[in-house]
Image (cartoon, rainbow over the protein chains, first blue to last red):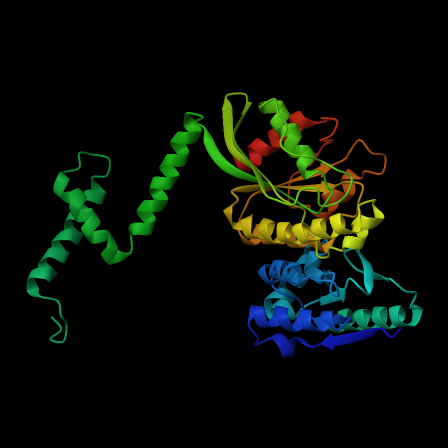
Length: 144
Length: 262
């Protein structure tokens, strides 16, 4: 089995409407691809994504696994770090962070700590897992 | 006077008189108000956009007097969270404590609650204060629903498919009801990882809608429960550590609820 990781740069969704963004991301997930979106959706879009996913569940499509990682949701007590994170958020907005959307047929579980995401697939795919981790780390590093 | 203006001299005089009378009235605020200045206040306020200020002041005074006399407040209280966190168990506990009856059926199989359930008029008391609310128990919010998971838990295929279909509708309804809530208790299973995206998305959306949130770290009677992890995941929200099943720490839970909802 081949595992496809589809990278979606933020520029591809930047000028698309909320519904358009959700449809685009779900269409990729329905093709059994793991979507790596640069940046994140707005909070209302995240819940809308869940709602639309539920509306589209059928025999083939069982839903998604979703994870968003960005510096703003890491718990820090360091004031300087907080200031830095706020500055980045003001300057870059929703471009900061990475969103991973995996079809439930491929991704069994997503485990996330504030700083890392672990994807557990239905099949053992060590090389794909490594590729995904490297790509996610690279994207996070680029933003920092 | 601007020759292009549609303002007639008569209108201009009325406007000027209104401004004058209102400003005079504002100096004498709290003293005797004549009937005509009240009318003129209403005439003047839309001109300077002061309507919203009056509304805010009215609300402020109304809240002040409500607090002063500990009057009852009616809120729509929602129970949200991932499936099997113990929402219905908590709803049953609240209903048992204050109404003496249960609200819904619970099960170890996920998505037992697949329809919104509302219990009207629950009154809880703490000292001199009283809180009246409608309790809304919602289906657990999930990003995936697979009927095979229900088959693995012992359901027959047809029953599992029906349950899965109803569960998807339940999630959609729960999301739709989010806007109607005045206050929400997010019920989390304290034995599980609190950093799940569903939890973060629910809480993030409540924050975006400025809905007050109380986090109930449930199942504290279980050995694996970790209240510190839940509190560390959402440091900006109050966390009540409870066991809805055993009724542990419910006093503290109601006190926290008062602080958040009242």
